[in-house]
Image 1 (cartoon, rainbow, N blue to C red):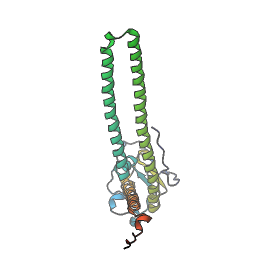
Image 2 (image 1 turned 90 degrees about the horizontal axis):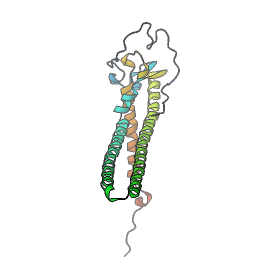
Image 3 (image 1 turned 60 degrees about the vertical axis):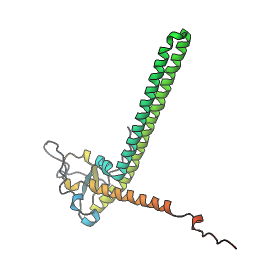
Image 4 (image 1 turned 135 degrees about the vertical axis):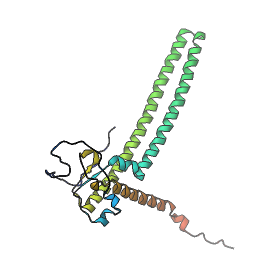
Length: 223
């Protein structure tokens, strides 16, 4: 599955020997602790007035826990379940048809049976291709949804990096060792949700606004 690789780098940063991501001796990789992270300080980046030159975020967590990501996962899960149910029904119908052809073999001429069996095989192939295409369509919709979330994530991460004075933002899987204080996943989720809510309110406002025709008052009836 090919996904668009978002531009998570907010700038260029050269790691020095004392950088947060470099270690002179090998050490066991452990999950970083999130205690004391910027998000858990209870302050927005613009309010905290702190400077973190290097930041990290967990893309999988942001996608899973954000409203946009959760909505996408729910839609795709519903679509996959519907397709699986349809596949089960088609399989049962084809199995019954195959049994019917097999039962009728003794009453048909050899040429007639072969013709019907071949037609059934062609039908099965066409059905399989059609259902595979539906599965690919669902995957395409999912990939497009992820790409849209990634675009919004880029905007959010750029804003957070600017607010915290960061010169680079890493995806968490790219980091060997880190301090939980530089993990901005929670802040990214909050900002994504803010954008999602603002867009929903804007769309609702456009839908609820009366048309020009509705705004015109109906003239009173003439006696």
